[in-house]
Image (tube, rainbow over all chains, first blue to last red; front, top):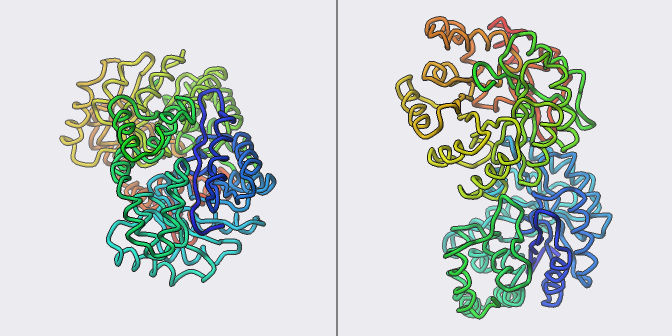
Length: 297
Length: 297
């Protein structure tokens, strides 16, 4: 489950609630495209903005409509108490795995984060992926801490942030981490712009935002990369470069939410206020990029 | 209400709930010490870690036990929807004012933050203090944005983060902001280490963490500062310098929570996991500092 393409779905919503029909359509598209796993309630799925009851419902819908594809459910929250409850909920509705980022309001210490993973992994019956995303959690894992957490029971993967640099640089970074973790724990790359290099450098999984909306292309890139088809991967990725520029400028969530709106897959707006999808010129620019790449708009 | 000493109370709690008796004792101490206002559910009050129902209860207890001292209630949340509900709750239980920080998970744009304050201020019947705390919200206000928000109805104060530097530097910073906001909007300093200089530099309020536990001393510093007694303020503040060093190292919340534990005012632990109060050497060091300053331990 924690290898190949893991596609992270949006959770379309507005101020009155979640658009369940639109969410189910997104999940069904992912299952039909043959992704290796479906991630729900990741950052792309707005987990941090939803109540426990809403998150339970989203997890339930995902499992129900995934047509047997394993579903990984995000269980992050500011409080250990809430993470434990969310883990229980995810397991109850049939999640195949869980994803946990050390969300923070007060800056967390390494010992506090280790304590969080210790408490949660002890309570689990499904495998866990450690979600390392300093851009949203404002917590920087050291490799030493990753090594300690990876020894905990039920830890099965680490979702690392995008690693800039050439193949050799990225390979060295992945190998440094690999040397500190048990052999059965996979390393997955996130930050879509860095996915191709990450996969070439030995990451077993791509935890993908764009894959949540354009699963066929993401599946093709992942399979080609895992077969070592460097040229084919480059060919598939080339038209996406302008998209990565927008990701950098506006955040991948806003860009993918807007793309889903433009494609008519979700209503507009589909993000929780105060977040807004792209407007005006940026929105037009995205439409033009999607048009020129042949992706649906 | 948004001038003088605003003392921010801890919300003592553990994994099973809030210690209401201990919280009420903290509130009663503040009222008895003659603080100008009591802040609850600020960062020091762990607002970000509590449910809406828990926050309603804390606000209610604070108003009930404040003996007529105005109570300012923190209403921050990641979602506008939740902030609006919390504002309503705070007003219902009799808060005199509210405090709003632009909490973030996804990095917020200036327009998104302006939209948040626009929606909330429109819904209010009590005044609002803009809570600028980039260390926890990861949002950096520009002065231009402060100026725009301060024009919104019901905005009455801005709680700025500590400004390092000498008196003249801080005065210039305060005056730059003052030039952009309406005359009736006060500026309050936070970051206890910077409070004395901030007050000397013309801030009307001190939004104080240490004042939540040591209100007599904080009241004395505030009054002396507002009367221009620079030497007296320096004398009162001098023994606190080692405390500010610990604040910097561990965060003011952990230090004050530990101090409250050491003083027997709250049970141990009193923070929501994964947060932990100071242990071992750091805890002993804090005890020694508090002993040498004559503050209760």
